[in-house]
Image 1 (cartoon, one colour):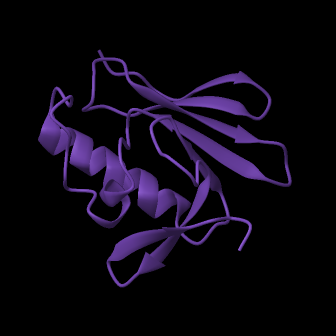
Image 2 (tube, one colour):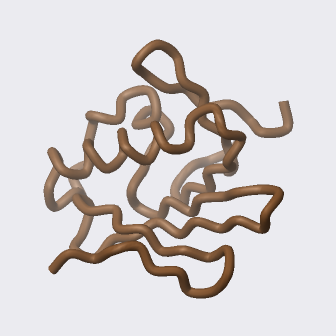
Image 3 (spheres, helix red, strand yellow):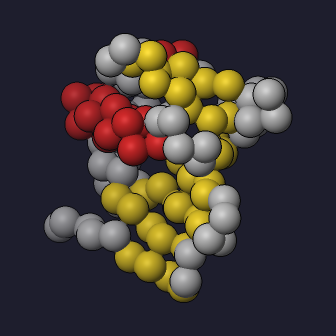
Length: 110
């Protein structure tokens, strides 16, 4: 089954994030001024931002989860969108910055 984007209400969207577990989604929130993405299990560890091809042993389809992570990071990079991961230690909110064909993260307060 293909899950497409679903807007739950104005500014709150579910976007498919395949590869970790069946039915996995990210939640995108946009109030017109600021954007945030709750990535859940799509990105388990900060190292996966710099190495999006590294999947955890919890991914049901490691190759697909790597593609999903790279697409998510590319969509967010350099936009100021705040990433809210479920499993990071401090900082628990980051922004994504592109560097060549890769990514790194920074604290949005910086």
